[in-house]
Amino acid sequence: MKKLLLPVIIVVVLAGGAFAAAQLGWISIPGLSKDKATDSPGHEKEEMGPIVKLSPLVINLKDENGKSYLKTTIVLEVGKKNQVEEVGKTVPLLTDLVIMTLGDKRLEELRPPESKENLKQELLAKMNQHLPSGTIKRVYFDEFLYE
Image (cartoon, rainbow, N blue to C red; front, side):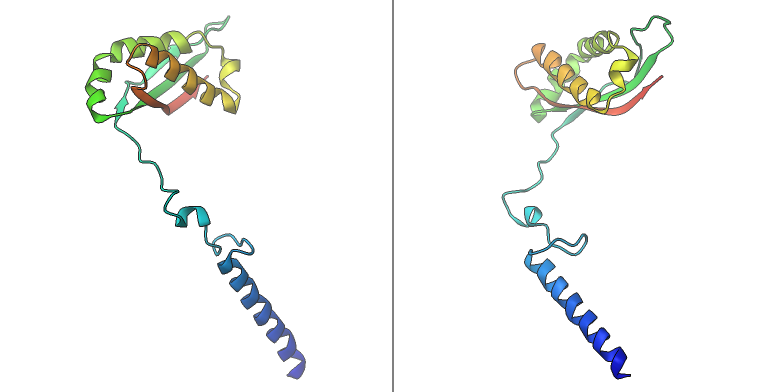
């Protein structure tokens, strides 16, 4: 029995030490360590602004065989609530801009993971050219399927 007691004591002491070190932030144990970024008041999550959702679109891509397409739904985050109506009035223009921009892409351009983020930035810049500065804060893809 004495031979079994020493290893148990060592395991308990080590586990207690690891727990204390994780709580103090000396080591990181997933699910046990405190995340300092979420505890500090200066790192609050930014709330999403008002949104305008465009109708789902099916867009023929620029391809030699003409069989590639993209089905997407785009959501626009607007800077202020009072700008939602202004963006709503320009939905036909913005939809046309999306169709023209995405219809000029090839399927190979859409496959890399970073391409979606690049498309968001391109669409954001083009849309804000037709609206007062900073009206649209972010562009989100609610749906993005291609073949």
